[in-house]
Image 1 (spheres, rainbow, N blue to C red):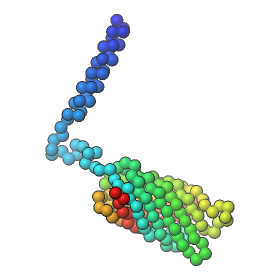
Image 2 (cartoon, rainbow, N blue to C red):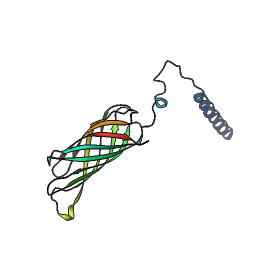
Image 3 (cartoon, one colour):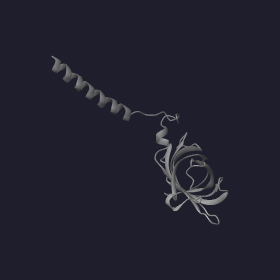
Image 4 (cartoon, rainbow, N blue to C red):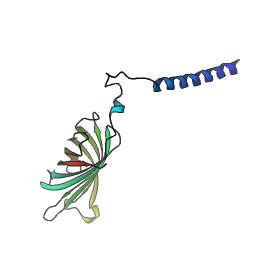
Length: 174
């Protein structure tokens, strides 16, 4: 009796899973409901390459920066970035690997953080590169246009925290 009940239960669950899968596949959405299937309306974001001007507030230097925005999903991007600040006797580099989030898929506010590798600031040769955490907040529209502006503020938490302001353009890679 117990084996028969188990067999009937397994067969009923299998039939229900097949029937429910077919019902979802055949569902029709009303034409007037734009919010019915948001995932179908949004295309996967394209990777972008960015160039920018940067200002390091601790050093008081202007520099150049670049980034590669690799979308992981509609809300998250993996962004390797770098900045170079030339000066008279000491050149400084900062290379970052950040995870950047958006509140909405097409929102302009971005925030995130990651790890920063910093070089320069008259350190000895033995500690030429330092690893430290960083956080950022920025504005960048998410649109299908081939060129988009962006602005970011980055805080790098080194011995003496630094703030870097970055403004530039990003170009679509597809």
